[in-house]
View 1: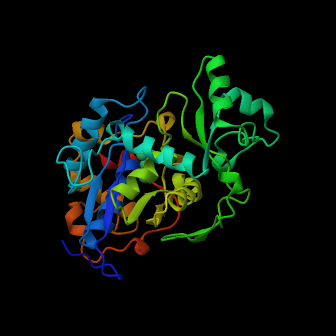
View 2: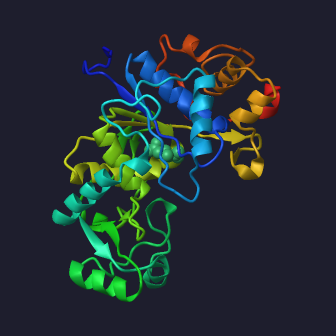
Length: 328
Ligand code: GLU
């Protein structure tokens, strides 16, 4: 497949949903925009299931996501159901890759073992917020300790150590250029020593997403604005792993009427709910496209009709309201 990117390379885009519940209109809108960007560039689309949260992810939700994407006419070239050269495409099956990356980062001193629990960090931290609103800033308790001592201490406390990225040491510019936002500097406080591998041995989102985007040769990440604050951490990980980062394009989130972020509380209908009420894919795609300013409101059309001439730069940069009740 040939791409039409300016540098002549083939675009590799991705959907990376977490199968922890039904796909709602917000996820579907992000998926539509990621798909349009990739298909308009004649790129290769990868579907990766981010199912590392064993307590919340389920096979039924994974099936449901694939089914909803197919229903909406959003296809992919590589994925869990069809394989591909960079599989497996479920994160739960990629543990050895994450372990290898952790070992590499430990060996290069870009990571260190930590025996602290979340409660220890909260107690010892003087700063109330770490980057990205992910909790208190890590106070540095274990960052200069010998790995063996930390492992022994954690074992005495009846747990395994976590592995943290040595983020506070990195003299990296934390600003970056986003395809939609332009120059972004969301981390005035700099990077934290964030967790790469949890005490149960499971890779944290920040590590898994970067290892996979490298291995799957993703060139363009199109995802929701809620992940904008994660990007500096991911850029630091790309650098530490010696890989060039993809281009990032963070698209505005969908808000329910009244400008509340779509959430369980506001009970937006899922794609499955809409389908069971007989709402067609064309009506849903039309509403999502209208919310991005691509077509006038009330137009029903298949996703494929939006591909020709699509550019992410066309879409509105502000969070949009989407009134699901108008969908029938
Ligand atoms: N799995 C993440 C989510 O569903 C998306 C990760 C990403 O696009 O980087 O929110």
